Image 1 (cartoon, one colour):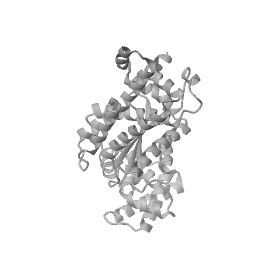
Image 2 (cartoon, each protein chain N blue to C red):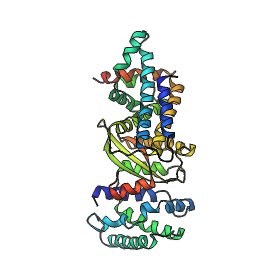
Image 3 (cartoon, rainbow over the protein chains, first blue to last red):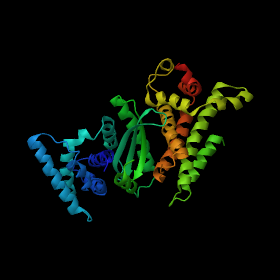
Image 4 (tube, chains in turn blue, cyan):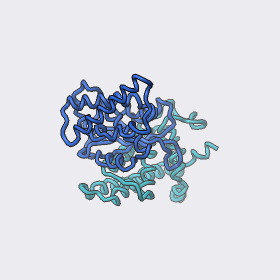
Length: 203
Length: 165
């Protein structure tokens, strides 16, 4: 797996988990809906190999233990519907791992967009976000952001269009607040397309 | 109906064809057509603001360039104005004008990919979002076009690049 592809897997998983906290049942339902994007052994695959950058000593061992436990949980839950408690536990394990390594895989602009995504209540069909820092076709600095949506989301609904307009606005505002000169290009990607992109080389 | 409005309607039609199994050709043409709807709206409005002679109104539209128009939209979309434009615009750009400029910025690379990038894959949610974004930009333009800053925007579409020399 190329390092760049793994960055997309980590970013997408982190964005899915950033939807909220385990105490909110709607968030747990969203985590359940988005589990194919984060509750898989692939999310920690490369962390266990040459991309692993751990905090020192005891904290590092704790992250390793969480990673092993998460991998085992992901394998155990594959192919069946997890219970809400299982989702909470798996999300907690992965969140602990990602918190320790996130700085190596995320960019300030991307974090700002993830925060902007979940800053307001969003429709249930929104699952996660992936992004790339890049230049647009004129050479201007840009952020390409893909909002991952459920395959059955209705793009003709007012709910979808209102969300699309609102998130575009929030993305512009988030980058402006950060002082970034990058232009946000917001795109939508059904979950099946996102999974294929993550499996075969993201974006 | 103006050419711009017809193009927007055509873009909408293309998104509705083959709803369950949209073709890449339909989606690409929809994105490109939606972009050109906005492009022609801008060109028509800017030309009307700049010249009254009927003969010139046929010639001036040929002077507009995609990249120049994109560069002109960027400060209105981001709020980052430089001199001399900064002296001509209010402290806060009307939100409708911001939306119009952002729509053009957003659509242009999508249109470029739709027309030239054979490896790009388009999906229906994205395409519908683009077409609806242009529709909303048309409505926003109708609301804001009477404001003085809208004229600054239109003139900058043609001349903005030269102001930065």
